[in-house]
Length: 594
Image 1 (cartoon, helix red, strand yellow):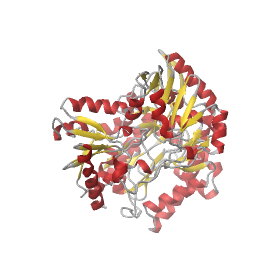
Image 2: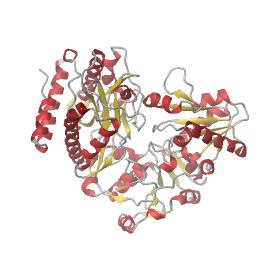
Image 3: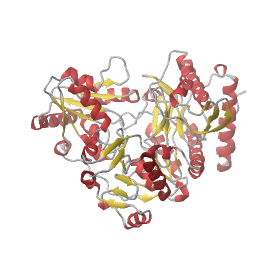
Image 4: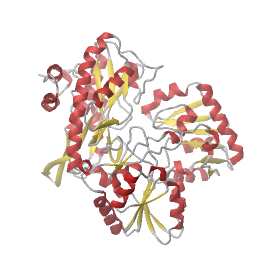
């Protein structure tokens, strides 16, 4: 495989002279700037061998580099070894940005190639501004990989399906009316939508084009009077045709979107430059006025209606039942010595699949035993697959896609004896998790203002984690969703009632173990006080938190009270749906700390 990667890079470099370029940038995304992409667009993975969901490769004539974040440092080091590709660790002191790296390695008059469909408007403008100062140009080479990737997968052709009102809670017609009201208020003629989750939400449609993400490849144009869906003709089934007619949405072929934009005249078009690819942006007729603004759909989508909230609670209940059955089984199975990271991954999926309304995983399960738990987004394969033993930590991060909700849960499970260091770190992470779960905060609070609550116990011992503490979660949509977040990086979006995020502090000791505890939390009203309204978090996830690693003396009375109350809720909610043996296991797992 390492030699195959080298060969692929060389085949790409042979195209440089034909295009008069001296470097080429390969991001992880697709024309919709998605986090997870269809196989057709897994270009960066194909050219580097690195399988993480986030990373950007830069190929020069005599060297190559890959930039990724802390979730993938260990994984990238292993997968890039002996490929000739250097790992650059983002957010680590001394790591140059891609723009700085190119300015250091290239000279005035050189040209950097990109595929404009794979970069947002913002990204290209920022990169261009930096490179032009050094006399370096940018060239759009949109068909480069069609030349070098000979067995490239075709685009998916499965038709989308309707997400029923019983789960969506709001009709597509009503959503379109709300969007058009915003367009009228903003005094624009039309909204160009590229983000696949926003299109799926708006139209109450779901698809199967991307693994674990119920999305379909398309663009959407919403004007004050008309809506046009751009989608491959082979995906337009009779059922979809009838549904689109019913909600008064026209459709045109997917590859006609650029031509449509070129022909628009004297229109004011709104788009989000961070979510619209550069090629699409450049295709808009110069006779139009472009208004650059955050998508109104993202905010509408993020605030759950009562049907969606009821659905996610129902999905959490079924997911919790599956988790408890799995954990009870795991307790007995590990002692056999026959289980491994891969085998338990399949077993957990089988337990989930027995639940109603289950569609599939919401992401590839992360089952990291001992040192593999320190790899934040670890993915076991036949080579790395570790057998489980009755000692140490298993970090298990998983989730399900249900018709009525999306789940995401992490539990760090003590399989046997633990070191004092492991117990200490586990307790610190638990304290941070509880601190955030108990937070009450005034309206207008941003996630970055709460992030410290989860990190403080770790910081006090000079420890930290570099990933976010909380990401938004879709409703039978993407497991990672904006615009809300809880992380150190500043995000101007305030937390509002109806928003769902994760609560997942962690700590990772390279070569030893990782700890992460994750529940999903719902922002809800907590009453009024000085200067206005106050909000709090309602923990949605229903599953015991392993108590074997807790150092009781490190917990405060309030933290113990929260954990005991949470475990009582878990027991009361799940026990009616379990058999006697499972109830007995759950009772032991949720015993109060006294």
